[in-house]
Amino acid sequence: MAEPQKPLLIKRYASRRLYNTETSDYVTLEDIARFIREGREVQIVDLKSGDDLTRQYLLQIIAEHESRGENVLPVTVLNDLVRSYMVPGGGMMPQFLQSSFDMLRESQEKMVKNMTAMNPIAKMPGFEVMQAQQDAFLKAMTSGWSGSSGPEPEKDGEGDDGDLDAIKKQLAELQAKLSKLK
Image 1 (cartoon, rainbow, N blue to C red):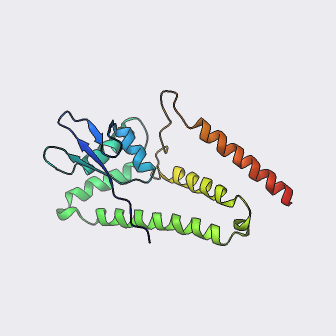
Image 2 (image 1 turned 120 degrees about the vertical axis):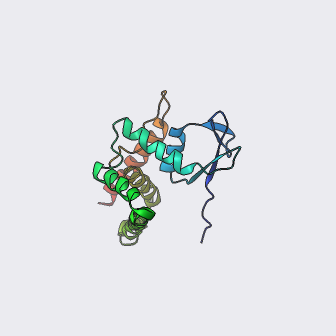
Image 3 (image 1 turned 90 degrees about the vertical axis):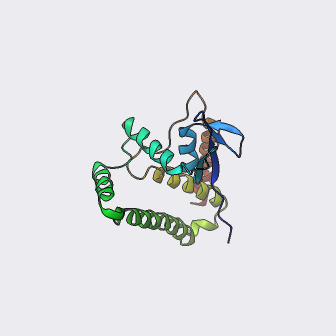
C-alpha cells in the first residue's frame, strides 16, 4: 500500500506572509484552500516559534467563506459547535465530526469502487479517462459538502479553459464510440 503523502509545509513569517516550502513562493489563504480542495493536507507553522498554526488558519478560511455569503456550515451546526465548547472537555462533538467525515470519505470511495467493479462498460476502451473525469467531478461536488459552493472560480482571467476543452473533446469522442457500439 502506498505511503500517505506528507502534509504540505507552509511557514508563516514574522510579516504574516505564508511561504510554500515545496514551490518556494508565497501563498494566500485562497491558495491554501485550493490545496485542501485538491486533496492535499497542509501544515502551517510559525517560522520563529515553531508553533503549529494550522487549526487557526483553517478556521480563518471557513470564516472568510462564511463572510462572503458562502454557507459553509448550517447555523444549527455552528450553534452545536459553540455549545460543544461550553461543555467541560469539549464534549463529544470533535470525535463525532471526525467519525462522520471519515465515514463520508469511505462511502464515497466505496461508491466509486463499486460503480467501477459492477459496470460492464469498465472494459470499454477509454473508460479510464471517463472514470478520471467522474472522480474529478465527485471530488469537485463534495469538496464543499457542507453547503458551500465548491471550488472558487479562477481569477484574473486564469483558468482551465484548455483542460475544459480537452475534457469536452474526450467526452465527445466517448459519446461517438458509444453510438457506434449501439
